[in-house]
Amino acid sequence: MYEGVVQDLIDELGRLPGVGPKSAQRIAFHVLASDPADVRRLAQTLIEVKDKVKFCIICGNVSEDTECRICRDPRRDPAVLCVVEEPKDIVAVERTREYRGRYHVLGGAISPIDGIGPDDLRVKELLTRLADGAIAEVIIATDPNLEGEATATYLARLMSPLGLAVTRLASGLPVGGDLEYADEVTLGRAFEGRRRLEL
Amino acid sequence: MYEGVVQDLIDELGRLPGVGPKSAQRIAFHVLASDPADVRRLAQTLIEVKDKVKFCIICGNVSEDTECRICRDPRRDPAVLCVVEEPKDIVAVERTREYRGRYHVLGGAISPIDGIGPDDLRVKELLTRLADGAIAEVIIATDPNLEGEATATYLARLMSPLGLAVTRLASGLPVGGDLEYADEVTLGRAFEGRRRLEL
Image (cartoon, chains in turn blue, red):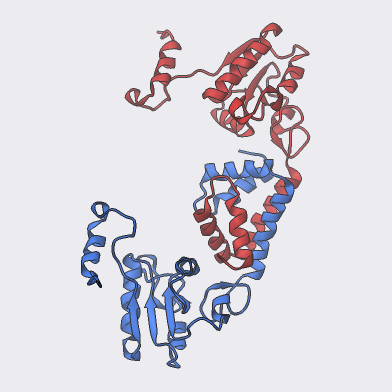
């Protein structure tokens, strides 16, 4: 519809996740109207990110070095390991400031529908890390959905002979929410996981 | 939250229209997982679009040459001019295949709230194009909203001494829509603009 390179840009932008044809057009016209220096900086950052960012050889987190910031940090507890699906989940856990251990990124969750099995995830790498016995607890922090639960159950069974504590993040009512709006599965989990009040 | 350049990319992406922090993060991780050649092509297209694309000196449409494809086309009727707000509106009109005249892009609409007056639009350029008397009809195709209507009224008054036909696109019921779901303003316009059926 547009002349040459404008259409090329709309097509390229439309391939990004969550960017439909209308958004792609809108972004393209924003780019056309932007300061050339701003656009050049975006283009440069795109190239730089591909050049510089690798995945940490220990935990699988995104990193500019061979090992990520968290794996390099000597103040992090080496005896606790939190298993997550994606690097962005590490950011979510870090934001809580509750956790001082290390991480292991699986790179997804078991999903037979999408053809993703344990061999497609970083499960072998997880077992290698557990081999020397330095880790005492593994916290499974996969997503609280079907795939995440299946992955958690699979990992828990796999690790059971290793004699370490395997825990799962609690499910229950979101803080600040309304009980009447909670779905029945969440509310059921909240009952299941109820705790005695310490007075 | 992320290390260096990953956060830079999320920040840069978050500046694009319609891209919030969550989408920016999602796109950034998509970029990290993409083929480097694909990302390089996107970056290259961004730079190319700023290098190559200019605005047509006649109509204000986006163009890789001094004059756009439509202004250069000798088959387009030089006696009819369609006035639109943005280059993307030209694409919308072209898609109808109903119009064979030329265009004039205003670069927006009059909007006192946003501090946009007639001097911020390509109104002077429009009057210059009308000066030689070659244009017999001006079709005002600004958006059917408050700003577009105000702009249409302003332009119609400005052009009234020139003795040419000034028309406005019809407002009415969208084709394929349901009468009961039409808002009252649109339905009112549909009554106002009703036409005798030719039998």
